[in-house]
Length: 253
Image (cartoon, rainbow, N blue to C red; front, side, top):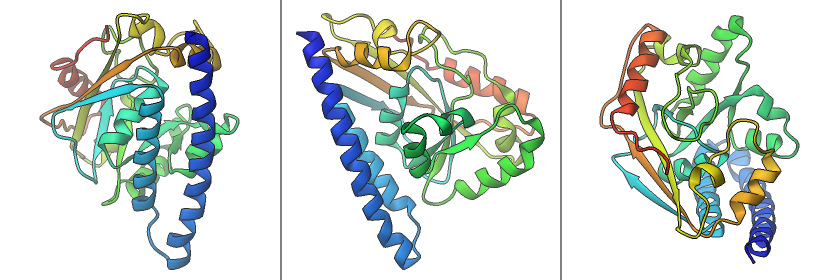
């Protein structure tokens, strides 16, 4: 029964996402023709899409703390591709992702179209261009979200932060906000670590998505820190931010 429910959910997810994306493209014509910014339309679209995904997966999101308003720079721990749902629900934002995501079939094109910024982490000489792009993208309509762990985890602890990903806020002396995400499942489900968190080489993306879709109920708690951190030294900033999140982090069950 759980497999039938799971496959049905994936079918609904695919139809919903493709249909919504088509509407998104049509809606973009207005801002383009009128010479307006597209971010307000994109923000409304992504919130509606995230609400739809939460409904399809029977996902309950609890928000604790005060989400920052644009423009902002925010870092969070990273547990799963599902993390974007609670973040889109609570923030007007876009994400900074590794460049490899841009070349994923279908998904890469779609995330590029909704304004995700891609960074080549291997090109250390590309700092100036990246900083300029991030500076343009952090504006009154949207904030920027980074996952400085540079990978996802099982949620038992906060992994070390990669200081190189914090070069932009360090150079620009930007106060950085923090958030933490944790998951739980119902008593009838496998623990969230084994069904929600997507990390390591245990499963491929599609295999994991099928497993996630069979979950009866998903509980997500997203907490926003009460203070920001700032430093001109990226390594010091990375340490401060990690300690900040560890102060209120709730492990995934």
